[in-house]
Image 1 (cartoon, rainbow, N blue to C red):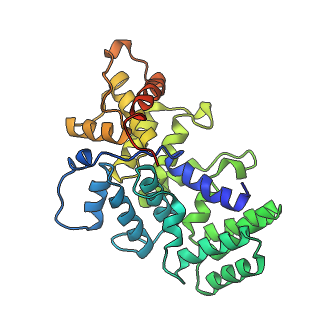
Image 2 (cartoon, rainbow, N blue to C red):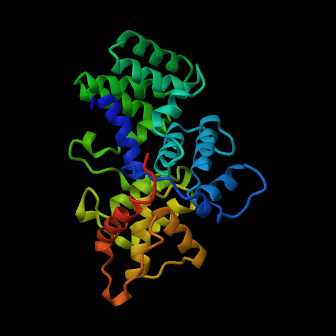
Image 3 (cartoon, helix red, strand yellow):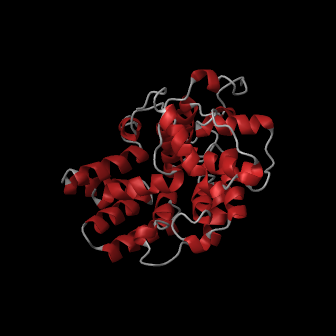
Length: 302
């Protein structure tokens, strides 16, 4: 895969993990609390129960700035959640449906045209973004420079975009593959997580030692997974990890309803728990693999 699309894919995977898509049973989603309207925070609550359509509406909120600041990565994170929870076939379907001429559509179009060897058109769109005052014009130009093997210039442009407020650029700079051996700025990520809740998933995955075992801190991982969950940013993998940690290590502040909801997200409602003293939560994914093989026979995949 070429680096320009690779960057988009890795940013999304950094937020939610590899897609683990099944269609969630509508009877389970119906257990979500009823809401009076489609306000942003009501949608958050619906999405926390795995409602894929709510994730798409949240993506629209990030796209349009309804109830939350406009945020390209926030939109991507919700589209990725919708993809994982089965309400769309692939993320590209949503991105190609973005309003013509909108900044976010122009970001996507510029990268896509560059992939299709329409280099001058791609550069023209990035320049239009800059004329509009969108720092993501630099982000796109940086991605194209990296694709052309000028990594130093690409990173310079992406760093410039980040300094001008681009969350897309800021998240790209956290991708280990582009860090040349440097570790991400943890304190910066923590401060970002207050305004950008999807960053909690990045921190949680760091603290489970996904890329660097020396960073493993299960207490902090649980903290950031819970923060992600509060904002409908929790992936299936994260829900499984939290359930394993809660049942096998330390009881988290979860109600019975919270546990039921996490089980729905993790798609492992059928699991019978071993006694706590027999359970090793870091082997929990092995249990989930067995459960998934059973669920695969009864749940329709994308």
